[in-house]
Length: 491
Ligand code: PHE
Image: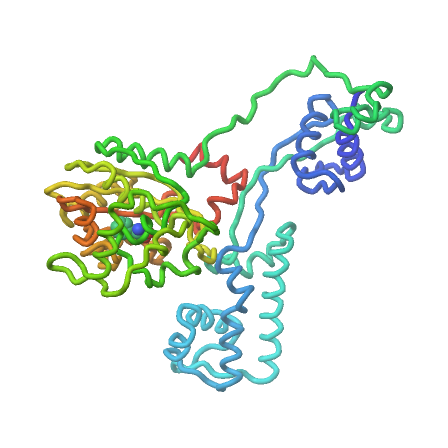
């Protein structure tokens, strides 16, 4: 029988490990072969009648958000214990004042370890008890780092230490394959099958090896089976849904550029040139020895004057505006730049525009921040546009996605007045979904826009967290294959 080098290795490994209960595919570790190669060789061996395969449900644990935080900072019970060592006793309100939510967790945990608060005060335990508790906490912390390094093979007692504690552990159910080698597999003489060329490489061609060495033949008798088809990424699906909502409401979709002038990204939006958001920590600037001339230069003289002295009835920022600053190139930090450009380049009213597109920010990445993300941007220019219509539109939009508990809170942007932020709750935590407001006259008038403009810029990944019930924004881009597949059912 023709076997590829990979198939031979997998077969050998399975025969070596074989047991009555079968061999779990996940447990196969073969140097030089990745998960994908092992999976593919296993499937071929099944088709060749050498393996019988049974699916089995496996539960794996990974560190969740809280787990990772505790690993970095130490467990709350450790922090409280250290506080006790320093102060000998601490009243409960003092614990929560110093440690916040972690304080509550720490008190519960220490109570379970035998340090119960007495009349509202937590007291340092005896020396002997203290050592035992320290030992237990150290064990827990070691376990956390072990789970991070190697999440396989945890036993029930280990899991039970964290199971009831919020998001320390994430339970991941995956189906894995259990392999049973057939009689045929046991009879095959592995020493006798020679290595044949399975993949043609440049080396095989240039060395002329292909002339003399045998090639593996195709087995045309293998029956085809149902394939796992490709499908759209959950984020793409959500994006399409959002586009549909706005298109159905009669909005026109606009396009913009990733690389923009600071002038359009900021100055045209009345963001003063000394605004902290312009500094390197928030914006990715491009190194361009000679930035091209500003697009639509005619309007920038008026924009500059508006920054310096304002417009009738408005004072402006009162500083000297510098054209060179406006010519700098950057990766757009928001899609509001597309809105303002579009309104200038298409001076019609009434009109309603939107986009779902990418923006870039110099952010440190964590559970709710990404450096590259999508914004759901939109604006309505109309004699009737008002904050009331803005709130109605936002509510309508979120409702179309099934969200009812979205609230609006006052906010601030240099280009809108008033400004409102949409917020929602994820697992008891408040998450800001995005900003919106009514463009200030200092933005619209220099560009010749006469009617009021309401505009918004909402974070799409934040919305995806709510929509798909994710606890960590990074999950969207990790592209875990089990996670991706599960969406075919959930949607
Ligand atoms: N551009 C803002 C942001 O990036 C959001 C916003 C858009 C605010 C439009 C007001 C009006 O967060």
